[in-house]
Length: 392
Image 1 (tube, rainbow, N blue to C red):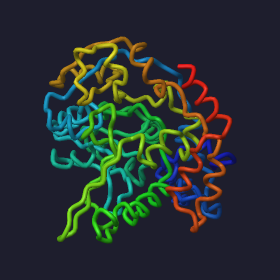
Image 2: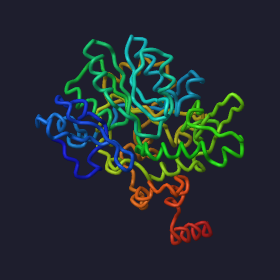
Image 3: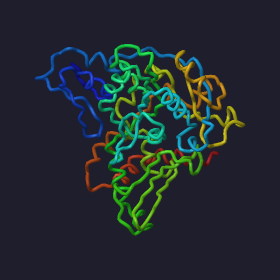
Image 4: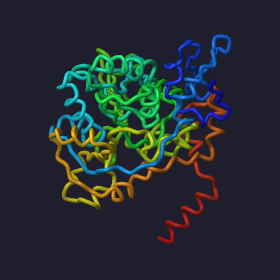
């Protein structure tokens, strides 16, 4: 039976709940907004399966990729709609062309992030683009196993800990499974995301610019990584629609309060500060991400429209990737890692994280203001920054 004494020892992959033969486990949200398994001890048979599929308990050895490259999708429309270079779409399209299944994360009607699957090209659009919220896996591992056992090719994409959880859940290697994870900075609290979004649509900025009371139901599109100002200086974007008014809210990453809190590691899941799946321990076939730093490594290749970092780990990955019609350029892994430390290094816990979450349920305080206050540097830090600027 799994016992979580320290919340950093659970990454929320949901493998244990899906594997439990007695159905005595459920994922419940804690005060911070993260899901953790809860066990009905009266129904538990102590079979130990939940422990066998836990990515924190069963960590693999570190490894390095066999092949590293920078890549672009030649379809400029798809690349524009993707967070980086659009390579995930190429992989997914190949699997679908083989009558396969693709699992990924998308928004539901309430703008929560959930895992689901598609069997057609049209369904891929919802999976494109980064979603900086921890997704709900629910029973996706069970569904993937069913497709695999019926000899369908399955591409399963997710965070490294989700991919590790899937592989442990399956308990065997499937030749028809392709796992794709990404360079993960960490997953923010779904509760903070809900609060941010609810406050955003009611904000005075919206009211002043539109003179309309929008609601969550009026949101038609959200992009955490809009390239309207370029790939490197991406923006948070939300499209709103009502019969009498259309409105697009857009803020660059250094101005948007939710993105600032996320990138400052203020409200990540506790396990993200001690990630059990860094250094490619997830066992994925392919790891993708943004090729940050490409402008210094291959300046002639960078057009600020998005470049994917692609790292292949297995012969299966090689066989599939060579079928991709991608514009690729091989690089050294060391070059990729130098500007992408999140590949191997966990986020550092923010000094005000505990204080932030202790105040989050105070209805008198705006979530915007709470994030802003929590990120504000101390007087000593501000003096140091000022001194450095003066010296420069």
